[in-house]
Amino acid sequence: MNFLSKEEYVSYVNSLLEDGHWTKDTISNRWDYHYRAIELIRATKVSNSKKILEMGTMGISCVKDSDTIDYDERWDFNGKNPTYLHDARQIPWPIENKKYDVFVALRVFQHLVPTQSEAIKEAFRIAKKVLMVIPEDYDNPILPNAKGITYEDSVGILDGIHPNVYIPMAFGSLFFWDTENPSCLNIKSVMKDIKLFTIETTKNTIPVSKKNNIKVTAKKLIKKVYKKLKR
Image (cartoon, rainbow, N blue to C red; front, side):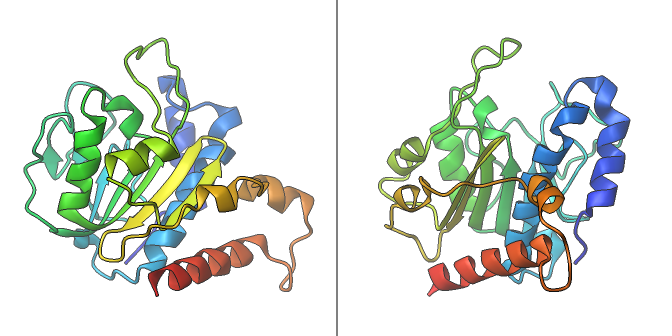
């Protein structure tokens, strides 16, 4: 299974800058959450790209040849041809129960008002593992109805289920749930005092060597956390 590389990501984003969705000063922060998402997907050991469903990719899928879901009203990009052409606010989604091993949505669910709660439950219905990056505080004058989803919101929507992995970041929080091994541990309290820097920022301030490679360290840490939480 092949994953998106940073070089591919930067090249593609640079080609879209005039679209207004990305700007030069946000490339690093956006790559940060893509990178973390990719490493978590890799840690699940899924080997078939068709067992991964990505929503609202804007043409930048974390996994090459994964299935995708999009709708036709907004967010157009070259080559847009989703596996499912469907507005995720329309419930239920046209996907059978647990068809996918991993569902991925990076900065999408803030747009799914007024059916955010129902859409999160649909993600749990159709996939064994759910990975989302969601701004917890979101204000966009172009999309006045959009709103963020907080840690507490997600736990309430899921009737007390906590994420297995939770990482607050510059562009939103990363939530990862394993529906086959649900967690009741409130990890927001564990993470609240941890200062998290982007991969790019850390790499620029710490000399990189074989012994001190931030990417290798981050990868090992994410895999270790996932492995422990899976027990």
